[in-house]
Image (cartoon, rainbow, N blue to C red; front, side):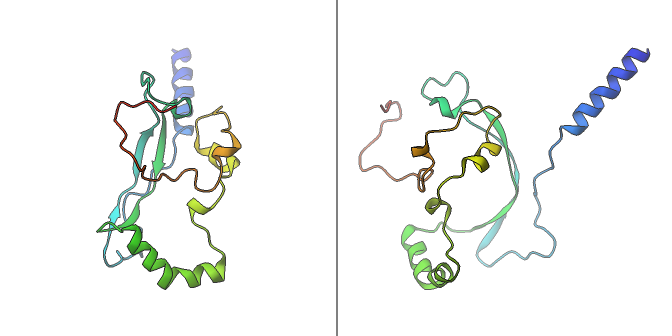
Length: 150
């Protein structure tokens, strides 16, 4: 009986210590919903390719859990043209005064990125950790869904 009680206590300690904080799902107190925006609740999702996905790149495996806090998003989509207009009118002064760079303009810091990746994930080649490397552009040609790229 003592053996099972000890095992139960150890199990409870392990599960209690491994819990991560819950994501923010409700609008934090003191925040008002900005005009033209909506609250997207936080949550947890599985990122990465399934083990049997033969088209997945090695860097897309294994799958792992990602936790995202809630955030505000525009109700309507914003085109690149609309965003460029905003940048020219509103954002340019801010960038000039602060030197701010968007995620797409910053090089990727492996020390920060590896904290978000599964344990023992190998460091990608430095050519993949350059500004803009996590940003995708629309191709100028048709890509078939089953096409395998070199």
